[in-house]
Image (cartoon, rainbow, N blue to C red; front, side, top):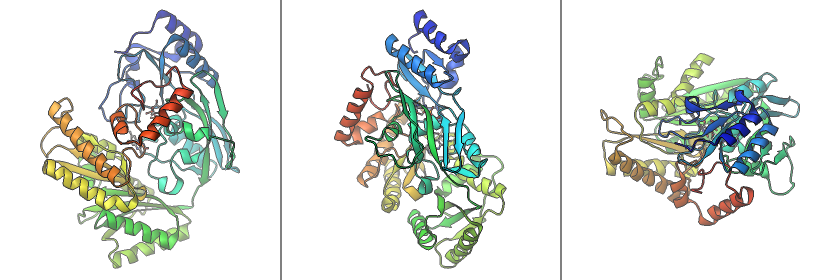
Length: 475
Ligand SMILES: Cc1cc2nc3c(=O)[nH]c(=O)nc-3n(C[C@H](O)[C@H](O)[C@H](O)COP(=O)(O)OP(=O)(O)OC[C@H]3O[C@@H](n4cnc5c(N)ncnc54)[C@H](O)[C@@H]3O)c2cc1C
């Protein structure tokens, strides 16, 4: 349990945000869960400021009171970045009341939003002016722009639009000393020294609180093509991607790998999802192209030829938005069906594209050596090398996270996955970040000089350790 706040601290923070901006007691629970149910956090109090100046006042007060601050977007992060796991005195700062769309400038292709704005709301605001936001995540109806930037979120459209950092033109943030960084530039080129918007992106709340951001908008395309293609192997999936881009250029928005196990878990756990193909295949690619109608038609024809030449073994093309949504559900519900099946190991690894086949083969072989009855679901953003591995207990065996035997097994299997990834030139964390749950892996696998510089930056920007203590670094 986090240390209870002193009366003095409570009074001071209440004076800043008013009683409606304070959450305490049992009502703080929703800020302390994680989406996989692995962790439960602690906090002394949740504060909900309404504007940037209030955030600055809270940060100043917490610095003076010796309280840590844990920024909170929607808590969908999955690596315990948004919750303190020990008993140090902290305040959770939720951006939920700072969700305004400040400016939509379609002509400049820029949108400026407050950090608590929900990604799907920002997407809708862009669509209203005939534009789109590049970020697309299965959690988009809850996750916030502040959380997306703080974690440098990836998602399914990285292939076409890059990750959150790539789409950020400017940032407003409250720094650990209470000053406001107003770097909300909306221009595309801005070479004026160290790029602080890029430093804040991916900083996981350890360098300051993002209060607003300017994001790039993209043209809203005329048509979308959604297809599920069966392919003989993950390497064949890549062959398909390269053949497609060689023919049509960078039109592919998303290119997601699914295994037969993943698809069957979707059908088992998600109600009303039909099996999209009559025959069963080992591997599938979910392909999304957003382009002009004429290009989409050409790609449809090309997929027919790819079937004739054996590049793909089967394909289902969505003929309505409803069908496209059902195909996407097979992929987007992965978080949910993996959890329901009892995944006790999850990874966020990425390897260079050329190493994807080897990564999957070596990890699968390593798991089988440990216990051939374990089941592994390999899936993810294969177009950018980001393969998630989820491991389940043998069929008919329940997962028990409290079991020390299972915990030791999970550690061993995570090490195996990370070692294969790093040996192939990959990373242990492609898009979710380090938070509190991947610190040991970060310490073990990160380049020591990189870590030393990261720690020096933290020390320089936040010498009192106010911001998200215990995240990214042990302390
Ligand atoms: C179903 C599902 C699918 C997902 N799919 C993807 C995916 O494809 N790609 C991907 O990258 N992630 C994915 N995620 C993870 C998650 O949605 C992202 O990490 C998201 O960016 C987190 O946003 P949030 O608002 O929930 O942030 P939170 O979880 O609340 O916080 C995440 C981190 O950011 C910090 N933070 C939050 N807001 C701020 C702020 N304003 N200023 C400074 N720091 C802040 C927190 O302290 C914490 O360290 C998925 C999660 C779920 C549940």
